[in-house]
Amino acid sequence: AVHLEELVRRRRAVLDGDDPDDLRRLRVAARRIRSLLRAARPLLDPAWAEPLRAELGWLGGALGPARDLDVLLVHVRAVSAHFEPGEQFTLARAIRTLDDERGEAYAGALEALAGVRCEQLVRRLRLELPSPRVRPCNLTTEALAAAEFRRLRKSVRRLRGVATDDQLHGLRIRVKRARYAAELAEREVGKGAAHFVARAKVVQDVLGEHQDACVAEARMRSLLGGPQGQRWAVAAGRLIERQAVRREWARAAFTPAWTALEREGRAVWQ
Image 1 (cartoon, rainbow, N blue to C red):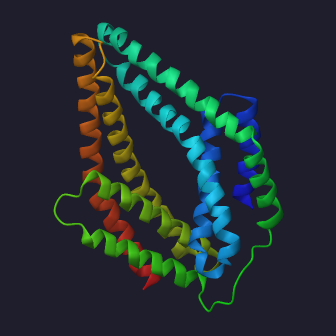
Image 2 (image 1 turned 30 degrees about the vertical axis):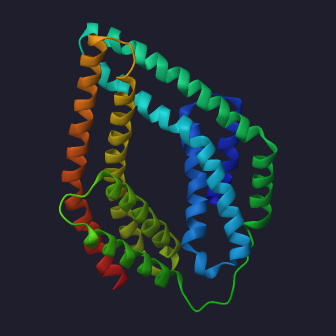
């Protein structure tokens, strides 16, 4: 109910304005509802829950390109502000290109939000989420959260040597799942679950920083193929170097963050 209220409010705000934070919060609300439905999957009627999850996935996908470009533009502008004036001038062209892409992506997001499909989804969520369809099940929310934590631990243990970027991105998704399952169990478990959620947020942020760096580097490299010239190549190269530093920081920060989360999880769920 909390996330649905946020979704409704932020949808209206995005349709009425152009604040990137409204778009971010709207996408988060849609993803949180979808993730909570997934976390509670064993307790819910799949014929009811899965179509809702599919539509929420569609909405998140429609908002994703604009949100990703917002994140990229904020980072590129912040980093380039510390460059020499000549490099800033060179990067301004790339920033304009990204801005134009963001405008197109935002137009697509607005079209989706204003469309019949989104209106029907919001109407259905308002009508049905207050009384979700459940099925007979002996599982508790505590048991669901414990199972998600065990799956997360196995995923980390399966990593051998230096994890690839894709492996770390997949791990971030599994951390989110464990976190949302723990949130479902907070009323049942109490402070222990809340402490686990706080630790999971730290790991999620670290892995999110790594993923943002990967996306930014890939985008900068794609722009290098254009006719911008040597100055642009040098400036873009400096931006790419910054992404490598971000990735290395995140990889170094992951180990202590995961150790703290695993310790908390073992205390709560075992």
